[in-house]
Every structure is written in C-alpha cells, then in structure tokens.
Length: 99
Image (cartoon, rainbow, N blue to C red; front, side, top):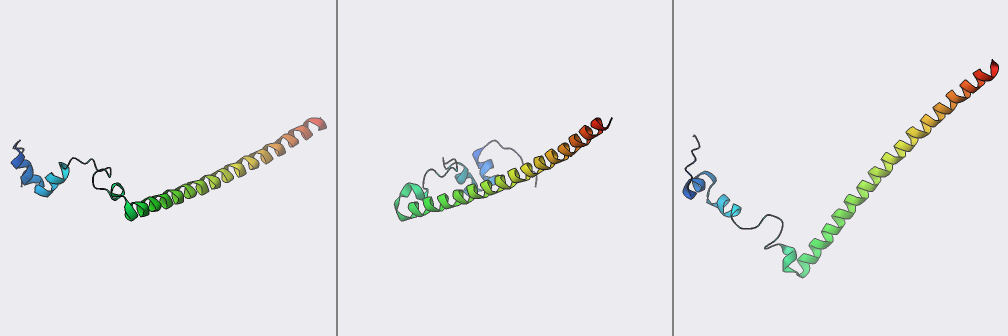
C-alpha cells in the first residue's frame, strides 16, 4: 500500500492512527512533566525518589569499581615498563663500564 502525502490532518490520522496522533500532540515532551507520580507527591513520590537514589548510587559504585580496576591495570603496565627500562639501563651501564 503506497503512502501518499495528502497534507491534511485526516491523511495523517489515517496513516498513524488516532491514538498515535493524540499521543504526539499531548503537549508533553516525554520528560516526566505533566502527570508524573513525583509531581503528585505522597508515598509514591517518596518511593520513586528512593528508588532513583538507589539506582544512581549503584551506577556510581559500578563506575567507581570499573575506574579503580582500570587504574590498577594502568599502574601495573607502567610498573612493568619501569622494570623493563631499568633492566635495559643496567645492561647499558654495565656494557659501558666493561669497555
């Protein structure tokens, strides 16, 4: 079924369906504005706020753990490079003193 642009509201309603059109034109931008539980206050708002805090706390803890592991890995790589370069330096110094 080819889609034709009729340019009219009825054509758009026919393509999208009336429910989709109402959802798109409800005025809300989908950011939790009008009608959100938190705006209503009460126990549900407190529970939602607590759940959000727990979620973001868990996310922060996971990020900190990942960063700590990454930094430990980087430190280990640098320590190995220092050890390798120290050995090379010792070999060069010992070769220089033999001549």
